[in-house]
Image (tube, rainbow, N blue to C red; front, side, top):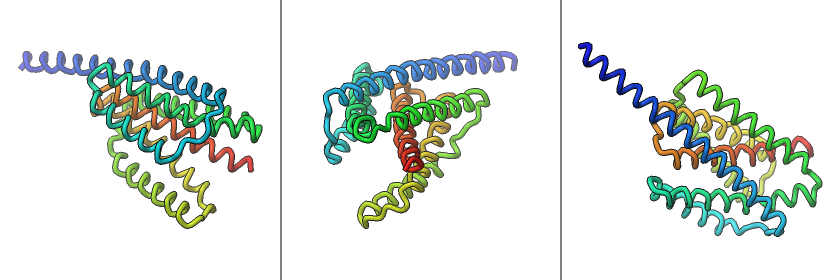
Length: 221
């Protein structure tokens, strides 16, 4: 019996070491991809890149996400992840140019960046401090995400604009919830690939920034 307990303790320690390694690698890679995406957004602003066709954007986005998943266990997965985050930074540059140059709303961008950093840091710290398992949120978040997407499509198809603030608030809550869910998945061993973990958290942060930006702009107007 003592031998069984000792083996279990060793196993628990090994598991904890692996999970901490995945967490450390994830945050290191996440920091690098966020910096790279920001630099690409700035480069796009300097080059005054116009708005990317939505079909091209979604085609490239989906293609790179699928490629990252296929190469998640190799160095090519990291290269593809940087390609995706850089592309998303370039795609964001036209919006940043419009806000900073055309609308003189640079302060709004700064507020959205600070707000995003506070939200992500606060939610991540809560999960890491308490160790709460937020796996139960998965189904609720997915349903809310589908509702938000359908509502956005309905507004686009029928030309409605009144519910945009509510939809932005919904998406902000959904992706904030996904920060809890994805961070929890790492520390509880549900996500053991740091490349995919980085992809999940990057998309959470990116979307929190976008929808927080929309809400701040709406309140400004």
